[in-house]
Length: 342
Image (cartoon, rainbow, N blue to C red; front, side, top):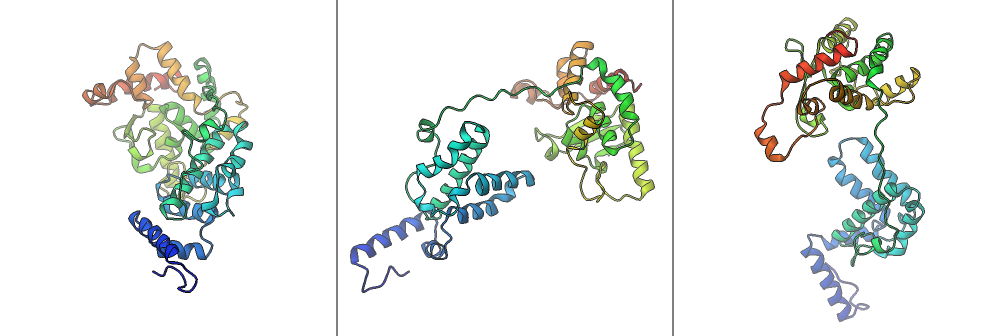
C-alpha cells in the first residue's frame, strides 16, 4: 500500500498513514478499500447509509421495515446525506432531530438510532474516528428534552352484548374480507394470523388450525381449535377455491393469487359497514371481556386462546400442554354466544 508521493510526503506523514492503516487492519478493515471508497465519493453519509440498508435487509421481516429505514435515512435525515461521513458533528445531528423531537418523538427517536448505526458502520469501515455524535446516553440525552412517555390507548372494542347482531350483518356481506373478519372473530386470532393463513395449516378432520411459529407474534406454534362455525366457514372457502380453480396456498388470497388480501381489508370493511368506532383488533378484547365476565372458563384457558404468555418461565416449563380440549369448549361457547350456534 502506497503512503503518498515520495517527493511531497514527509516521513512523519507516512508514519501517521501507516499507523492509521494498521489500526484499520486491526479492526478488520482493508485500508486500501477504504481509501478507494473515499476517492470515488463513497464516504458520504448517504453512501454509507445505502450500503448499510443493503447489507442488513435480510434481517427484516417485511417491506415495511425497509420503508421505515428509507424514510429515516433518505427523508428525515436528508440534510446529512451529502456530508462527508467523517465530518458529521453533533450539531449536524441535532439539526436533523430538533424539528422532529417536539412533535414526532417516536419518529425522531428511531431516526436517531438509525443515524447512530450508520455512523458506527462508517467507523467500522475506517471512514471516521472518534465518538458517535448520534449517541444517546451521556450525549444527546443531555442536549434534547426528555421523551414523553407514550400513552397507548386500547384498541376500541365492541361491547360483547352487540356481537351477535354484528355477526348477522357480517354474514350478509359477500366480500372475502367479510369471511376473513368472521374467522378472526370466531377464533379470536390476530389480523395478520388470519389474512396470512395458508390452506395446508388447516386439518379439517381434526377441526384444527395450526399456525406456525414464524407467523406468531410470540414465535411459538399456536394450535387453534375450530368450533363448528369456524370449521364450516373454512370448509366453504376451500370448496369455493376448488370450484374456481384457484391454486394459491393462501386461504384469503388477493386477485393475483400470489399474496394474501391487504391487512387493511377488514378495517375498510368495518368502515363500509358504518362501524367507525371499533377496530378489528378490538374483537380480541370483546372476546376477552365476554370470557372473563360472562363465563366460568379459567383465566389461563382464556389467555391461551388469545396466544398470550401466562405465568413465569418456570411455570411455563412445567405446563407443557396447550389445553387444546379445554379451549375447544371455550371457543364452542363463544361461537354459540356470537349466534353461530356451535
